[in-house]
Amino acid sequence: MIKKNIFIGVLVGLIANAIGLIIVSTLLGQGDDFLTVIKNAAKEGFLGKLISLGAILNLVAFFIFIRKKQDYKARGVLLITILVAIFTFFFKML
Image (cartoon, rainbow, N blue to C red):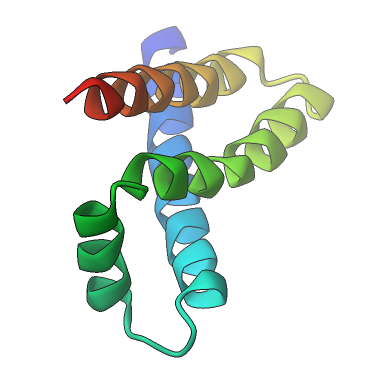
C-alpha cells in the first residue's frame, strides 16, 4: 500500500511537471508551438530553467496531498521534484 501511494505521487508529480512545462512554454513561447519552444530553449541554453519553472505545479500537488494527509503520495511528488532539480543541475553542467 505504501509503495502504491508513493508511485501514485510520482505519477502525479510527472504529470504536474509536464503540464507545468506546457503552460510555461505556451506563456513564454510568444505564439510558437511547444516543440519549437523546447528546441529553441535547448539551443539557447535555458531548457533547464524552463523545466524548473514547469515544476512549480508540483508544489500545488504536494500541498494538496499534505492537506489531505496523504503523506506517501506527497513523498512521491517530492521525489520527482528532487529528481527534476538534479536533472536540471546536471543538464546545466553539460
